[in-house]
Amino acid sequence: MIKSFFNWLKQPLGLIAVGIVFLALFSAAAYGLYTTQQAPDQPIQFPHKTHVAFGIQCLYCHPGASKGPAAGIPSQAKCWACHNQIVKTRDSALLAPLKDAVLNGESLEWVPVAIVPDFVQFNHRAHVAAGKNCEECHGDMTQQLVAQNPQVMNMGWCLNCHIENAGEDQAKLIKLTDCGTCHY
Image (cartoon, rainbow, N blue to C red; front, side, top):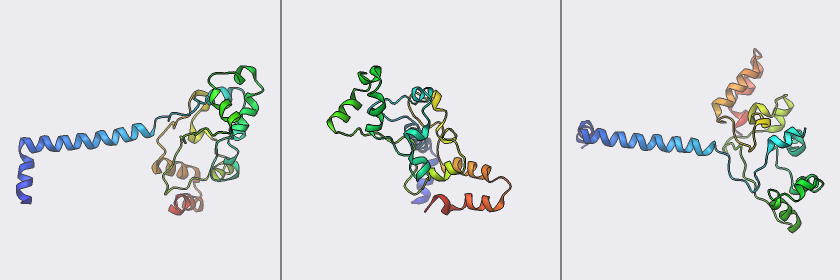
């Protein structure tokens, strides 16, 4: 039976079937990669570019990056504390969802942009302490109107950075490339 199946695959119809299966698998993989690299819809299209232009540092809105594993998202109260002081933004239609949420005690549901799989532990504090700039992973926010991943954040990309940063220090290389450094 197996032999007859392989003989069938050699026939024109079998080759067409293999081509269709290959095309379907390739298309599914390409679609998955494409959708994971697109900026998700947010309750407010937050313009990082504008905030950076005003000199607001990453750690002002994301203080968790220097204190723990997660950078965090600023509270609505923190956002509104600034925007409520600026007439142009206080009455902005773009910020109406923020104003309404704060005044009504509701939450805006932000969608994370830079996500690692559950089996990976990314610690922002360790990277900030090592002198890494946010831009090295998140891209140049002065050019991003909407936050998005500037590159595919996968194991190969992380390992390349770890190897590069270890330099000639073998002990550091072993620590940075040990599976347990990121998978625990």
